[in-house]
Length: 289
Image (cartoon, rainbow, N blue to C red; front, side, top):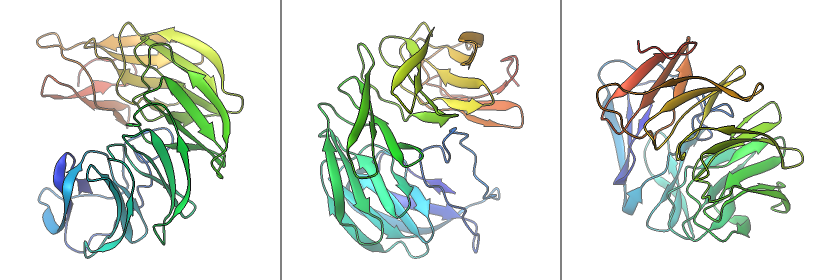
């Protein structure tokens, strides 16, 4: 499945007759593997195009027969997966954050700093939660709790009813990335150039790991290792249990920042960079493949 970004239309490209597995949140799953079960052929077909008055900057979510996408035209849309027809729209601030869907509810933050919970079937508001900064990252889930970051330098954890359980401050912020959750832990970094390992039950910091650069991308986890790039042109593999960087990779010819998130599969880490290249690295040692 391919869904476009940063254009005033949403495209669905698939082989004719293919089935799509659910993609309910940013990077597919809590560990942000970035890997889908759907297999694609070399040649894709455009099945439909949905046009809006603003750009679709954030990643869409696909659950059942519906695509959910936030738009810069200040609307959240529910679109039929097969025909591209609008099911409903929900008015709020401009959306550039990715959308998450769980248990019949759509979760997404907007550019005005408001986090929204919307009924997935009806498109009606269940609740909202206001922060003091733009929300550009998506939501993740720890049991019945929802976790997301804001430009106000905080990571928030709310109940499914929208009540705040805790907030964790990242000095210098903002928290741009979508949280990755593994084993009751979440990970966040910002302009402080430090990866914070946080207990999702209490919102308490467990470890701080120096990355040597600001982070704008979300991490991906496989086992005890988190993979993430920095704005200082370096990509890291971090053992978050031992609290140390295992290896780093830097393009020897044209190093540029990493704003995109990695995918991890079959012992490989695949990530795009501002060097206009996609890099495939050995997950154990960081050597380019």
